Every structure is written in structure tokens, then in C-alpha cells.
Length: 152
Image (cartoon, rainbow, N blue to C red; front, side, top):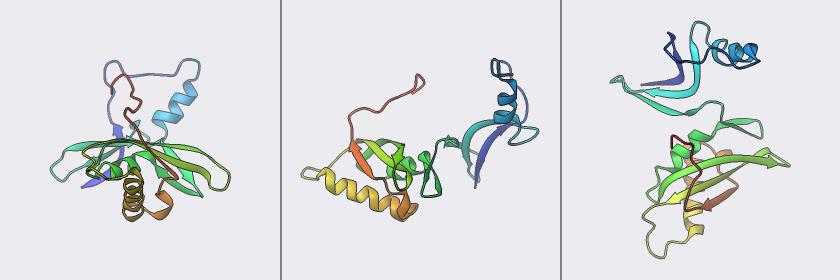
């Protein structure tokens, strides 16, 4: 059981070889962080059985009062709540903390009479316990659709 950065040791057909008009940036981004390996930019968890699970982009970092926090970390904790199907965390400029967090989530199986304020409080408490108090979002929004990339 180990987690870290996903790096590839050998080239494969069709992989990027440069960034147009900025080869130095390509080298700094993908080859310099882990010499001898191609750094994908993704975090990964490997189980003791040898299975790999992508944990999210390592560059999706929010800096809250000097604490660096990955958005995927918070999203993972939130989706463990029974009433959350999917979630997304984004940073926004904050006068005091530098960056603040906003959590949007797709609800699932919310019990009748269960208010969004109660659910928001539960999610903030869950994040505070599993990660840290500073990781709790400033705003929580229930939504019916989250933005997706072409691949989902």
C-alpha cells in the first residue's frame, strides 16, 4: 500500500515529445521532476495486491493560509458520504487566506426532510475530521450537473 506520483519509465507510441515553441517547459514539466522518468502529473495509489488507482492531478493544489491542499483529496473524502454521488472542489481568491475553497456536489439518496444546511454541516465536519479544519470549504453548493471534460 503506497501512494505517490505516477511516472512512466519508457516511452510509448504517440506520447508527447515537446510543447510547441516551448521545449524547455516540456522538459521542466515532464522530465525534470523525476529524472529518468516521464512525470504524468497524476497521483496514484497502489494496493498491496498491485492494483493502481489514480487519485487526481497533482497540480490541482489550493494554498489556504500556507497549507497546500489537493482538490482530489477533499473530493475523495466528500464522496464517501452516503448522500454524495460526485463532487468538485475549486479555489477562489480570498482576502485573508489567499485562497478559499468552494465545494459543489451532486446529491444521491438524500432522505426526505434532510435539509441542505444539515448536509453541508455534515460534509464540513467530515472534511475537518478526515483531513483538517482548514480543509473545510467556505461554500458548499448542491448542483444537478458538474462540468466534465470530453473523457468524463
